Image (cartoon, rainbow, N blue to C red; front, top):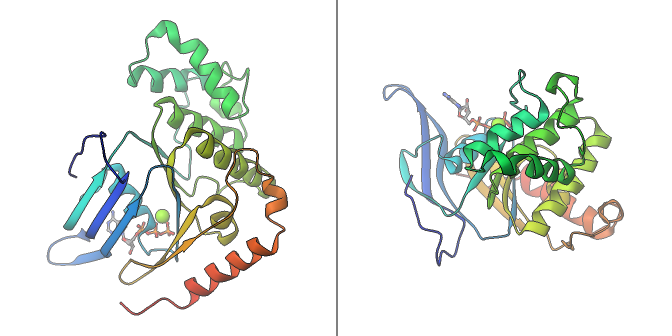
Length: 258
Ligand SMILES: Nc1ncnc2c1ncn2[C@@H]1O[C@H](COP(=O)(O)OP(=O)(O)OP(=O)(O)O)[C@@H](O)[C@H]1O
Ligand SMILES: [Mg+2]
């Protein structure tokens, strides 16, 4: 991955004609082929597409966990990652998990306690620092994982189906929290989901992928209000919301030929 300085960069994420292959050179699997994508600072870009089309691969590429066989990847600023399953340290408390992230981020021990409380308040878990992670519900664990990603003050947040394992109500609540958090902080987000509803709720832009080979087939702007105090529950019931969902479904059904 090419590194880039943060000063004066236009884009936060810039993939240029990227191809990723897995497997051996004798039996390669092309996970994504010739993907070009630019994400500007403050954009909330959502990736949707069928299983196996390369969504996780693109996220891992941006995170620097994967290298392209072809093309270039430039990622401008500090990156935080949230996976589908929160990978917390089970032997540490909630606060201990966050303290570890803060120490890795270079926050001095004396400053960690206050910052932990701030982070927990952000994700609606005030006062839970002393709890064991196995005492938490799935939604609470995922909130800790989000708080942990925020501990490093990332300017780019990568989220791979972070709410897929949650019940519908918790999922809706966390969608609204993440949407507001991102717009308040001006965070750039690249978010993977299988849900068209979730894509339209969250994204300022939805990127539709198709499989075999994994590629981008549509780029749909979502012109819904993004102020942190937007009534998202009301937004879900508007005709504009329904129209965007329909547009997305139709783009996903009729991918252009490779
Ligand atoms: N480590 C790996 N080794 C070999 N092939 C892999 C590896 N990881 C992914 N693949 C293949 O690359 C392709 C893209 O996988 P990827 O995980 O990016 O898809 P995805 O869109 O995230 O799917 P899902 O929606 O099921 O999570 C698939 O064909 C998959 O089998
Ligand atoms: Mg995946």
